Length: 463
Image 1 (spheres, rainbow, N blue to C red):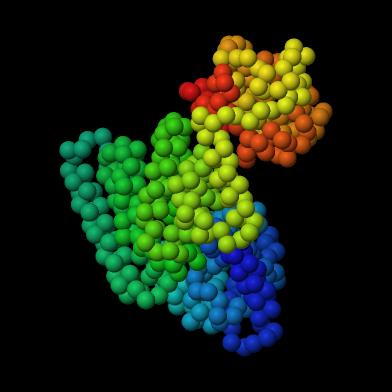
Image 2 (tube, rainbow, N blue to C red):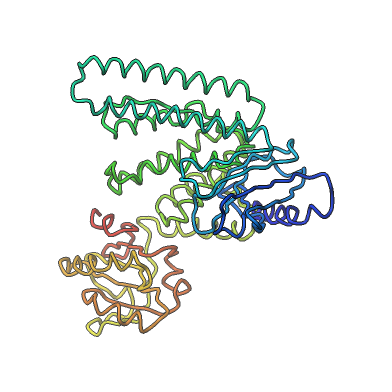
């Protein structure tokens, strides 16, 4: 919340500053051939990104004035509100008082590069990106030939390998020279921390991805607090975690979650020697897994790094929510007695009035809702499973608040015992069980003690 308040304050300053002082930074852009975009939204980075200003585009141009005291960093100027790729990242270092660029918005994506007419540091940064991308594309094309050439003993293969080696050497020299010449500015910092690792193109792509991951943090300074105000750290963390979400790697759900946990620990180790970067990393990870609804990894993060997160929650609402989740983790641990549930049963064959009245080898409590797409994928599987496993009683507790939608939905799941109080997240069962997402499956033994808590039917079946 503290970051958001800073962003709001900066928004006020940015949009009114031009009228109050001459000591300012003017950022202007010319979006050539623009017929679609009406405004530019400025985003500041931190734990995620936050809109801090908006300015209209008039006759293909916009201009915005910021205070000279603005926090140095890389700011994102998003000129499309429907596409996440139509933006320009601009270094605002506080030293340059005039930043101006031109961009042809009709150019294809790979050629859509801003040309800076004012701002030496941005000129250097974008020129490096253009030249390095050309070099890397050349290496990639040559590697593609090596990977697919049918006869590895052909003379041309040796020639291509020699050319690749020369191009790699040239790239590394170019990279190092740029970093050396720009070690005291933002362009150098952004480039230095995005080094490139070359793999063997003849190896299987999965092995190449694994090797890149093993060298992912090589030469990356993960303890420079100023870089929090740029997309560098957020992109690095996000891309590192996405390795386990790549369908081509064919990770099972268990392998993916184990990989997430290992990745979280690696990230915290990398970012952990500086207090600011450590807090940034854990909050960004917490936010990410909260947004994607992976409750298991969120719990792992919050329990493993509870001490760090406790230092971060300087907002009363964030602190209360965090403490509530920690309370829920303790209450719903394996082996604990499950809270009783008074059942307003919607199944005419059921005679029980509470969870504790049910006599069964196991009981499965599932929280779901007809408005939850993932639930509606899982519930038919659960319904069939319940039919084949009569020794497990399945209690389906809906978080619906629309009686018509709920009544219609349960017609398809006749093998489950249904109940709903139409209070959504505020229902007693949902609050007693600390439900934060749907579907949630909670397996109980014959004494109504918790055996396990699961977020997917596949996890449940394994148990």
